[in-house]
Length: 122
Ligand SMILES: [Zn+2]
Ligand SMILES: [Zn+2]
Image (cartoon, rainbow, N blue to C red; front, side, top):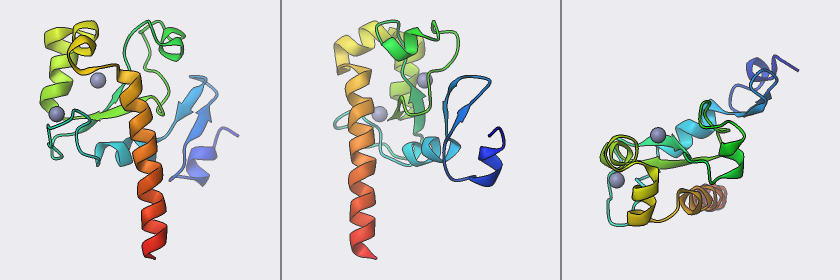
């Protein structure tokens, strides 16, 4: 089923090559959410950040060399993303803001609730 992506452009698929879930649609949906950091409120420069760090079992499988699967992302504005990668590093960033994994979970829950809300409104 290598051509899954072509047949279902809006859904994710398991990449045979990379052996992980890949979904451009999910990354796009996450990047349209506001930044995860409480009180930040930025929604214009948001990217879907792939969880980083060897503490995370799924990220560890990839030894930090390859990005984790696309479900393991959280929305971050340019500033908070830059701070994580280039200024603090993920460990200090987590000491300051909390665990990335919690934000990944909140992201998934937020998207699920948004979907329920959208369905109720149609
Ligand atoms: Zn990132
Ligand atoms: Zn932010």
